[in-house]
Image (cartoon, rainbow, N blue to C red; front, side):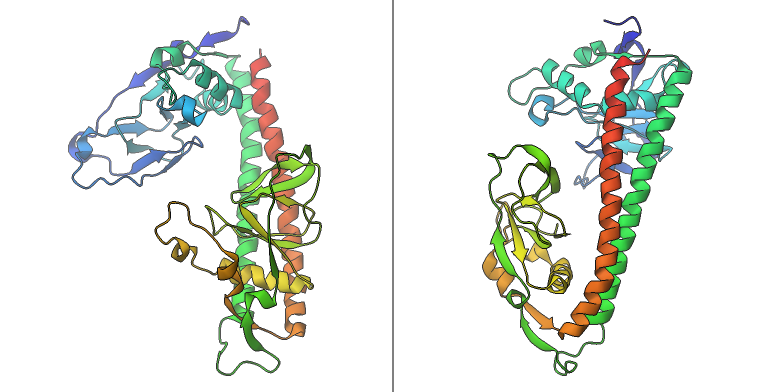
Length: 360
């Protein structure tokens, strides 16, 4: 072990401050993606005085089910001065921030190598909990605080750029949605459609195809999509032309439009269409749907070709669709360029995290 590696336990201490007098109201949960989230717990009839207070620059973690989830959820509170969280979560803080910066420690926790080590150390059967003592015995390199600050600054620069890009993508998406609604929804009288417009079905715009299994594919540079978005990259495309991708299972609302070669898994639909304008228009129709209505008591919501093909739509004349296509193509191309930049930045962020093991 390198000389500058130290046990985590030497630099942290547990904190157990309860919410006596209900002095704190903001209730947070902890996600497996290592972030604080608004709590969705049912707290009716719960004694909130027994909840733990977490303060700025303190950590909350979960040592339960680490082996099952292959992650140890842990997050650093940065955006709030204080909040409360379930008493099930250990709260800890850095003993001396002049020796170890909380943000530097959080970077270590975000490494995939940290999760693998935590999973290896977990005990207690299939779910595998991590004993607190084993967590404290895990080690990390602790360079001079000035070096820590430089690393944190570089990391935050990358993260902030990714966040800014995500906000730009969201703004572009909202702009496109607004254009769609202005051109095709607001002020449209279904009983008196503009000249050349007519009523029809979604099947008039595109043809639905099933995605396929991908276990036989090798690593490559072709995006592989699942219901959650980009999964990885493979060596062959399933389809090379623009397409609307529609989840069949799970996160049904995650409709995607792609205009590059891709492969999508067998729990996805993809679509083919003669005119790119039809694809853009169909994409925004699908984005407006209430997919919660499809969950009819099933544990996993499902999409069917019958449902999709039978969706009632308004079919504008082709000139109007072509105008829409010209505008949307520019917006979508800009979004994809930003997304590609974010993919590169994410790779750079992961590379920086992996290099923490070698700092001195």
